[in-house]
Image (tube, rainbow, N blue to C red; front, side, top):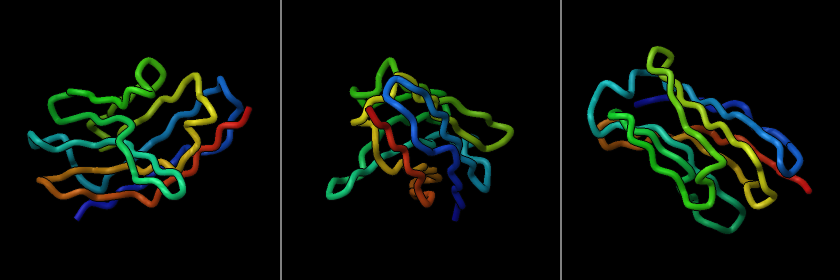
Length: 117
């Protein structure tokens, strides 16, 4: 089992920036097929992928955030970051970090991001 802890959410005006951090309790990026990523969820809707980075360094972004959000990682710290720029009100959601370790998903508790006009 992998513990996952997020930080960095908050409130910002449209056009602003936030950076989310996520730390896993063990090394994720030592095994091919593992990944860490960010998902988001709004009330009444399913949790959806925002961005993901794999052991090989491949990244995957939702179309709605391409060009605005960047996922990166610090292997030594077992940590990933989500840099969110040019935020829009529609980015408002609870953001969850996921660490996929040998096929098992491990979720953080979530962090609220609120973007106002």
